[in-house]
Image (cartoon, rainbow, N blue to C red):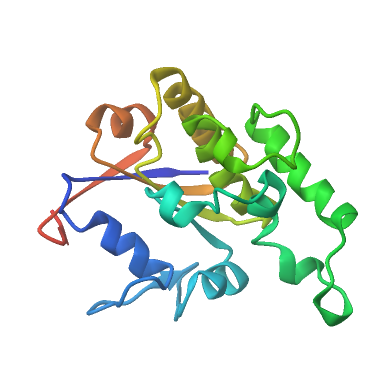
Length: 198
């Protein structure tokens, strides 16, 4: 239920830290503990499956979403293994429930779940990028620059999403170079510079 803000300027090492935590970057020192126990995470699948840890990338178009695919496919990508049947077959009705409930929770504005993600506004794309981790029942969620590239109204909506998730018990690591955003949302703030906590 806590939002921990990780503030620092671009180049401070915040994104590299987040990527290392979820297995997308190499850890060069220190140790990672999840729920007090030492964790070894090789990739984002490991992070989610073993530790219920999700990562909303700052680069939603390059990493967070597959723009040419449907909203449904983007949200369900984190739960395919859980829902697959023999021979890797996943039926549309099986994914509909978790997909629709996570999209409804985030109030994604769309015509239907089959439309391509590329047809959504930047703010709604960011919500879809978040919805896949909610569908996967992540307990810890890292948001890396959640309001980059979205308008003021979408930014406020994203802030409400983050606060609502924390209110429901999710642990949030909020990475941002926007000091006002961090002060507004975070319960506790860590400052990073030169690839170290200051």
